[in-house]
Length: 465
Image (cartoon, rainbow, N blue to C red; front, side):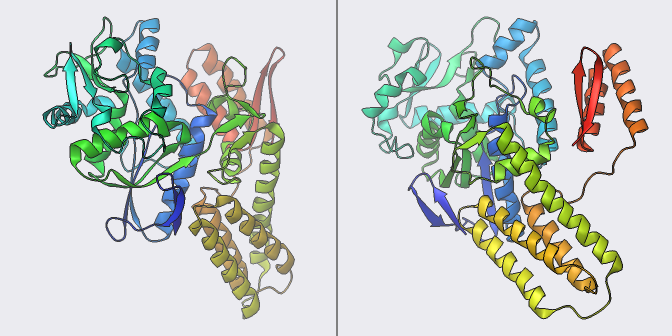
């Protein structure tokens, strides 16, 4: 299997540190609000990478963190007059729900930054002892110029990086030895959570958190470090610097980054009014469709999110599900006859073609094209007098290839109209009782069964999709 390595800017054969095992670290969300559709892309892409590596026989240690201490979390907590942990725990639970609905599996470990503070303090002390960091008035900075390879991931030199100073500035900028130095530990401010440290009460810098969590749960060297391309600089660049300076070894073998998601060819932003959470999108489309849509393009290609394109993905997924239903019906009538060796061979050849696509830098777009070839083969060859073993071969293969992509091939059992109306009434009562958790659960149950609700002035309307 070959993966495109952002570090070397070329595809490289994947060779794990330990044979048969793969350690993957994916930067997770900062939990101050519901996750948005842009967050969904790396979650879906790298969950698929994990699934394919497991299909290939690897034992995968998949670590994806929750950043649960951050300026945005603190701001939200102060606005609501609650502790920051109340905000982070609330949105960790919401993120887990959205991930489940997108069929993104739980990570091997979902570490939280606030639970790993002692390790972060230890790494900062190591960097100070090695001369890579220094403390000024309770703030600890990393000496960027001391790390000679700084910029090797983003492929910028230190002088070019001065244009990125705005991203690195913090209060007390004049205290730095160099404008490019970044924060490892910051002193507490009024109303902020804090931890005791040798440099006073404070909290860790964002970049430090991932370095320590990946080290604890995977090791000094990671097989694959992944995330959105917006994290290449400064986050991943700073992770490399502090980790390699502290540990004295390479930080990650392969760096994978997914491209941006646009909305109707525009950058997603609240000011443009095109900022959508996964929860909002899920009210319009089943999230199974969104997952299929996300994987219909190569992960390194920019992806444009529009109603027309999502509808096309919905129709494509419908073709697959319909083919599965036809094959299941054919299986009921199939004979115990000897299968056609030529047809069996064609199915096996398509599996090999699928694997070749996935082995080529996780090319899910080409892999989906192969699934459509299998659908065409199924539709044209399954009919009267077909053998049971051939029907089973088609069904097992469709389920296998779709399953690697996290796509379920069986529809949820349809609801009767009376049952739908009863659930809607129950949801309305739950909302009146301010039992919003139950109301959301009912809406999601209906959505999973292909029923979309629309709250209007005339009441709740529903439709089947």
